[in-house]
Length: 415
Image 1 (tube, one colour):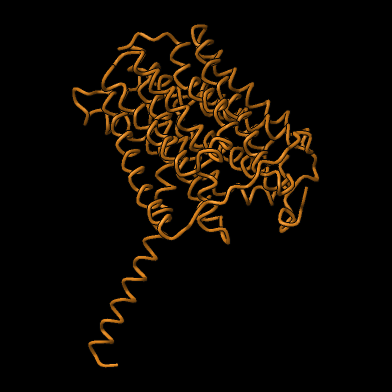
Image 2 (cartoon, helix red, strand yellow):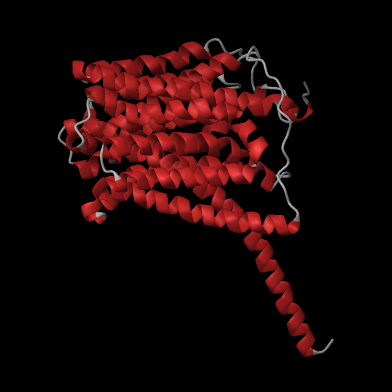
């Protein structure tokens, strides 16, 4: 082989390697951006809530429903979304979900009123309910031999979506939008959704050329009487209630304490930062606590203490917020992992769907209850959240002490 042929062969090898790397990196990046988009719109509501209360003349209850409504819709849509994806295809379902996210984000630009805002959050709820189960299946199918990486990226993107949205919404995006104001912020997130959908079209087109398809498993029955499942689901729902209540109301809480709107969302960003830490250490806490009960009880008490700290010592806002983010993420991550750890392998998918539905139903009660009690004074809604956080400890006491993950057991368990 002469020098020209060697150079040509080397160039071909480099091109092939580059295409293989691109075909692996692009889908993982799209998983991240899709999950990221599933969190940004909902979290964006909280930092701009004082603006909505003033400009759109929303009452406290209706302001709380801005988060509660999409959560309730997600809970309803999550149950049949798996079957919808099986019927119409996971690619089609995911693209429809991203399109709905984009449409919802652009609606307030055309109608910057309360109606446009509620259409946005409602459409967002439908889109997320469709996207999350489908996205989880697509993520696992990308690397069946090692599904940890794509699923870890999926969880990381949810946390980072909340962190970035709470950090830049009022401090960066809102001033940049000028006359578009809050509608331009939603439009910004909608543009990211549109670009992500274009990326998926490129990936799916390449998969069709190679004959790659996502394998769909047949739905299987599942009983919630599996030991420990109900108390874990209750704890999972309770942390959702606390988390989404703060996502909705924490910036407004500090505006009422004299903080400017541009910085009032920083404690919410601290909650998201704590969430990153909590999601990282959760596997270690499961091993250290020798099961689910001890980590849940510990997180519950620390969460209640931190909520009390927000009420009594608001000057330590960032410390309390990090603790709350840490504890809610710890329970969220362990709750999401629970079906794979305690449920027979054939039933993990169905158990995860039930867990998510229960969790989002519980999450609805957080922002709604907070808004309902707010006219009575700040102590009442904060006391309500403390009570919810202590519910986690009460539920955890019903989790069997022997319920913990044993390496390799979930791969050998059958129906």
